[in-house]
Length: 239
Image (cartoon, rainbow, N blue to C red; front, side, top):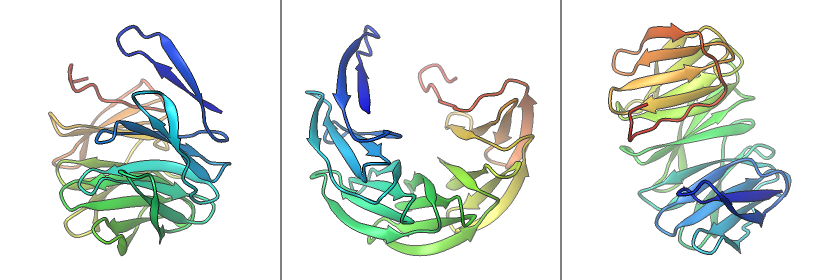
């Protein structure tokens, strides 16, 4: 039940910070230089001071805090509560919980739409995505997607891609209309998504395959036989 701090210059472990029970997700808040950590079985978030690696606050959230997302325009942190089907909204400046938004059943993933100032929340048990207007934290749409949506990823084409872990497809949502634009078949249940903003491609990985999607035309370009469960984009080397 700790967070390990690694020096990015030397790759040495420089600290271990005690947090809550079974930490599951991390998020960096650049304006305050703090790190947020979800504690699913502690009903809380741990806020770490990035300069001192000390615990700055432990705000109480729902019974099963899981995923995090940063609203960069309004400096707010959104946190899903799988147990109570809520999304907690935390003030990034103070670490105080501002409100709770009712989502669908078992919200497990979040992403932020920078163009429209909206937060998208995937609800794995109700097979839909809740759209939250970040300006007033009201629910403005609920979008039916595939089976067991578990990962969301926003593209600069103003679309949200939703990996449906209970099926073999990825749903593409048009953020301008909050309607499903298309559903793309992939080879296996997708486990993660990653977007390359330089060439507009979306990558979907599963146990045995990585599917490369044209983020403009929303067509499958290629399938590589190299699987995995997590993807990450390197902007410096475009990889």
